[in-house]
Length: 334
Image 1: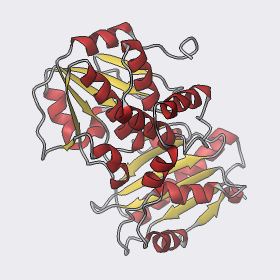
Image 2: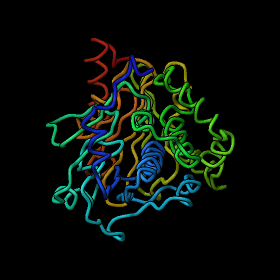
Image 3: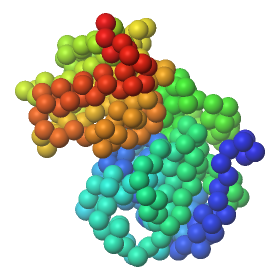
């Protein structure tokens, strides 16, 4: 695998070995890739005698309590930023996505290291980076780091990295699943990971109200562009949807004609969150970037300001324009 994949830069390995106190951070509402990669890297670095502090803008979801029950995940500002000589951003390359942590981390005199697999837009502001956009998950990069450091993964690190892989590949059903992903997953299982237990914890602990909430959201379903575009928009008069949006998105992607899925939900701060997915060839990252967002080619997100009605209109117009740009004249009609 190492011959065909981005190797860990020697400068990154040196920085990890030289640092004494290391802060690991990630994006707002950290997902399984972020949480899992942090668990894996924290255990690897602790085995080298480093003091490691995980500090995120939001706490982990309850679905990942098999990690958070064994490893402390701090949440700023309730937990302060310690004095540290190295700050590592996992699963993001932009400090702005760290929420309230962004400004104090930017002011801290520590070196900044980015470990990520997303497309980055803008200046390379960091001191060091290990970025591979072909990697299916940030956890794969942590796995390569562990190998480069010569560190054996313990049980918790293995569960963390497996969590990273399965959440960002849709349990190996997305197109980013490749030979490296499956080979690493196999090694982690050999180290004791129980896939059925993790699947149950992540995906089978939903509240009884979830099916009703999904049904309520699906009432807003509309198709455009001859059925190629599916859009869900939450009702601003109802409570903000707090469930797992991937469940909704997967239902819509199961429709044969659908290429693009957009889920726009209002938030308590009066703005709207976009989750965008594509099934085959549409670049949702290009769409999300129109609204200051980003992510992957086939999975991206953004925040749209203003009321739901205005955000919906702007999003629909932009999506239809992108269909025309990416697939040619007439692609948005029908």
